[in-house]
Length: 434
Image: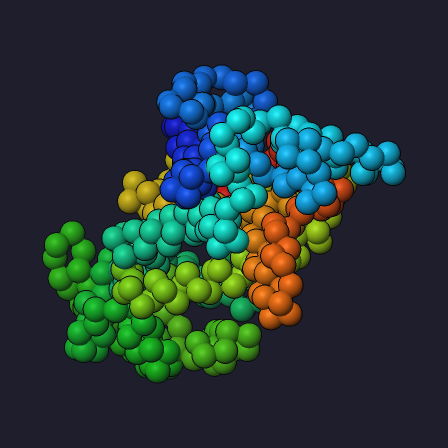
């Protein structure tokens, strides 16, 4: 039940993110007078819907996105008579374009001429289309800020409480589960140290942090140290003969040095390091750059997903993931051994990351993504500006219908990509552990 709860939390978080994305489009479309006939979360057959005014609000069966339906997304040609689309048979692509124009024209009722999308000012079109990704980007910042400022980044902070005591001294390159017969006991084992003991002083010098204790141990090679221990609420001292051993260098773990050795490992409780607004801004900037870079490498990443799905390759932990994978990660978080506070942190970070990914992906300047319509609005502004400079008539709206062949190819790519991600998430999912 815990795993299912985690799946549902992230699933509904994803659906809420999509719903708010479309709400951003809807709010600005209605603000600028565009008639919106549908607001839907999901695709395919309708699961539930209600009409409010001129708009149908609903949920569909396939939870892979959402949309709002605005009338007049495709403009008629300037040479067409009002309300009519001239049919041409110059090729299959042209036929598809004109069919799409005809379908778009059928949605325009008498009196809607001033409520169509293509008649809005270029900056209004830009705002309508940017409002969706902007909503996700704002949500990402909000969730990142809540996670980092209210809860804080989980970090391990070693303390001078003993987690384990090594029984014997072995060479640095030896990996053993049991001590060899000729291996000498460690200084900690000789002194009788036990897991759970807290070292409160070293040679009379109080210690409160493991890093300070570690430096004192390393500086005491071939010396006998007096350790003050706290065990079961009682304090007492023991003598521990610190030996010299080869250990990884603290400044450069890639090399080893001869240093003092006691034979203990510390308890490392997880603490939450709350971030300041400035640190949150830096984190958001860094993760945005990394996400945008990953987006540019999406075709390469999808090859990795293919290899993971069909060739048995290991799944890239930083690669793309579909809705099924997001849900499975939610289940893994819910059933992990982390405290509840850390689980909430990871859920918030996941929802924030999903919103960032949705926002950035929709800014790609290709139809049918929002960025494609935004690019059309910007191109329209440039064409109008140049026409004014040259004293020419207003060129009118950009004919985005001419980009429909690219739109169909891009839509097919998105369908294939979504299907591949779902298959890979089932066959070879990304796992947080195990």
